[in-house]
Amino acid sequence: MAPQARAKVRIAIPRPLAALQAAGAAPARVPGGAPPRGPARSVPPQPAGLGVGSEPPAVLPRPVPSRPAAMAAAGRWRLRRALTAAFSSAAAAGPERPEKLTVRLQAEGVRNIILNNPSRRNALSLSMLQSLREDLLHDVKSKDLRVIIISAEGPVFCSGHDLKELSSEDDVKHHSQVFEMCAEVMTLIQKLPVPVIAKVNGLATAAGCQLVASCDIAVASEKSQFATPGVNIGLFCSTPAVALGRSLPRKVALEMLFTGEPLSAQEALMHGLVSKVVPEDKLEEETMKISRKICESSKSVLALGKATFYRQMAQDLDTAYKMTTQVMVDNLTLRDGQEGIEAFIQKRKPVWSHCQDEKK
Image (cartoon, rainbow, N blue to C red):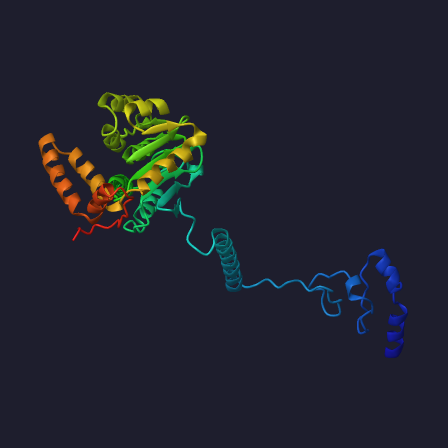
């Protein structure tokens, strides 16, 4: 009976496999018989758990990972994403530190320091101030450095402090650090042994106006403007007032500070905030003309003269004359002091040593 029963089962095989595939049905497996043959890719995957004798799926379902395995996989994914972002940032920034906010160039005794953050209106953020300080002090005692020019990239020379750094999001310690660094840079300009020229081509406001006033010389284009508008946003320009009050008549300085209204370039020239005003296309030429003239003189003599000028300005008349009289005597002892006089008498061009050595 058993062989006959098996024969009946085999006789009961359904339609051919090709017909079933054409109809979109899965081929049935006969219990106890061999699985139907055919390309595995043509067999649609079967749900798991059909029991013994069911057709195995062509593509096995991915097993569900355990919780620890899933957490490890997620951690690896996050790490890959973080590394990708880091390398992308490094590639964009280059192998060195992020681009400086100032650019320093030097040739033939003239150093150009360019404020180079026009997207932030060349604001004097803490980073900008630190970068400017670094460029001012770089190899400052070298005989090859004779004059420094401060200029800016973009339509705004300098908009003053970065107000985002002065919000309540930063603490008082950070605020103090910003203003202290600013004061250090402004006073440093006048302590440097070489003249510093501001080349202004655009708007200079608040601490930016303070920067112009702190320079020894300032050349501006006709379109330039100068203002201290802090009062309009509730932050009086007290530190810019120090430089303005020493460059402008008191009433002019106070009008700027009380109203925030700008001075035009011609008004700034008339009141003494800038040295010269020229057409924009002549700004570079005029600034370099002054710089080259400075480079013709002895660095040591200019350093002595600059330091003496700022010292005597803080003294009363009698004290100033007493101090400068001694300086004149000291100047004569310098090697370049005697070289200049001898060259004049001999009707020749002086040969400067640019050093502080005394004549022996």
